[in-house]
Image (cartoon, rainbow, N blue to C red; front, side, top):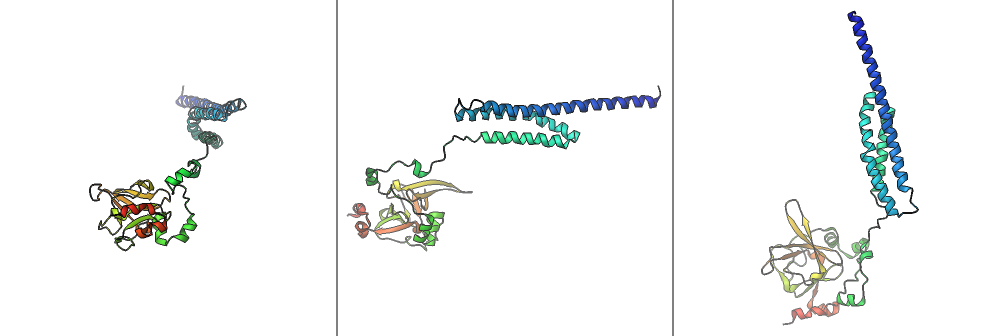
Amino acid sequence: MTLELHTEIIRTKQIDESKERGTHDRKEVFLNILISIRTLAKTIMRSLANQRNVSKNSIHMKLKLASSDLIQGSSFRLICSLDILIRMKNNYLIHLSVGILLLSVIVMNACSKNPDRPAAKTASDTAPAVSVKDVANDPWRAYVKPSKEELKKKLTPMQYKVTQEGGTEPPFRNEYADNKREGIYVDIVSGEPLFSSTDKFDSGTGWPSFTKPLEPGNIVEKEDRGVFTTKTEVRSKHADSHLGDVFRDGPKPGGLRYCMDSAALRFIPKEDFQKEGYGQYLKLFKK
């Protein structure tokens, strides 16, 4: 047998093997695509078949589980087939396979959203009904915060920046840092009592500082983690106004320093307590 004839036989054999391998690959690709389409349709139809006899939650869970199986099972076949299709350079089948994969992902994503989950409740939905007794014990419980537009009309720019946007006023150049009169400090927005001059001290920081709140129930503390430091923000409970921050470097025995912004406060002198509706705090200043 001549060398040329031997070479031709080998080349012919390789071509036949390549054609046979290509035919097998095409059959495998088509089979995987058909199985994926069949699985997608079958799982959805099976999940919805008994919708008249089962609850929506049951349908949702079945569809979710079926779609999960689809993603893990038949979609894996398609991913394996894509390698073959890329080598075959069959753009049509590549697009078809990718389309089925995307459809599977969409179905899975749709199932992850529970249609029967109730809508998130607002504060007004979850708040318990306010009774006359509750209002008597806590007159600020029924307080309704004004809208942003109303607050912008009522407050100065600095007051709005501090209470609504969490800003900070300049130290020393504010209204109450050096105030030494006897009285209480209330929220500039709601009027809820917050601090007393009996707990005020000179911290040297340039902001009004207190060792403790007058009404702890009107104070909400939130931890504020910064890049380098962690501090605790202080807000009013009913108006949700930003008031300032509390630090653990105050005088003993409590060791706390409530560093407040004057712009978040309104000072009520003790002689105006009765007129302003804060008569119950007169006892703090009786000698």
